[in-house]
Length: 390
Ligand SMILES: [Zn+2]
Ligand SMILES: [Zn+2]
Image 1 (cartoon, rainbow, N blue to C red):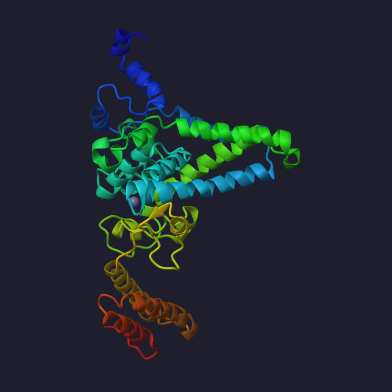
Image 2: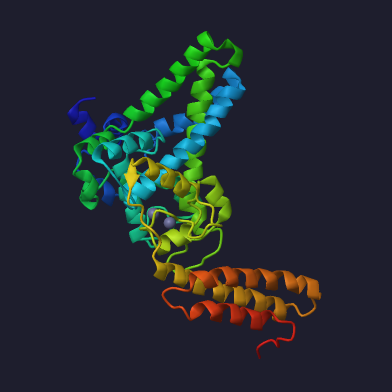
């Protein structure tokens, strides 16, 4: 392709640029700003590696399976989900804890094995999401663009390929991070090759495992990475659709324990949209947040430090919000369903009282008067003689 023929055929020019971008993610003929200003449009050539990632899952039909290869796929899903949430999200996007410069580099390499582009690209887009959440500018809002675009479509769009380094200056000042971000296929390729090599060694040295190099490639890399992508993408799509809203955040973020399980704690998305600067997203012990437990353990080694807590004022706000919703739930049981048996009324009433009791403890500071009041209000609503409000 000569320069003159390329300029005469814009499609050809875009395809040529997309091929270069497979290697150099910062390649942007005409400038990154111009790319970002384009309308949303799938760039099929640029997305071939992403399509291959999905198609590669079919390799398991040819290579078969072994408990070791499938076990690796599952383990690597969780090890790398931890990298997505604990590293790309809670470190690079929100800086909720600190580490050394070398530690930061190691975290970026670990994050690179997730095959979700570079840490800086990820952080730029995520900060942009918080800034414009569920508004017209949000690149992946299910309310603006529909479910599938928010789940997978947005990352296939040309306008979302470049990293705007001017918006992440705190990270862009480290050339080693910029390099990993620019050549974002290096870590994934080495990672896949490493798994393939491990499989080869197992064929020779541990034949009893019945694991082949191809099983390791298809299962531990392709299947595990594809599942990891869709697990992560659920936060962009489903976490703004399914679950409860504790805080009025101005967007439609939600808390879901199911998504928290799939994503190691990211399901407490409404909590996170209310206060994005804390390391933990499950604000209470019963809000399952394994990423936080892992980061806490890492902090004991001295590798990371300064984990940011949830401020007391936010916990008190949460307690008041939960209190209001448990009173409303108890009232619904008493008012809307007078036909229910006493037993069926007792269950939601007891649940409301339990929530109020636990939350009362969290409402003790800074407004100490809220604690007893929360318990008292619920007790009044749910006691058998309570009359429904007129
Ligand atoms: Zn969100
Ligand atoms: Zn976030």
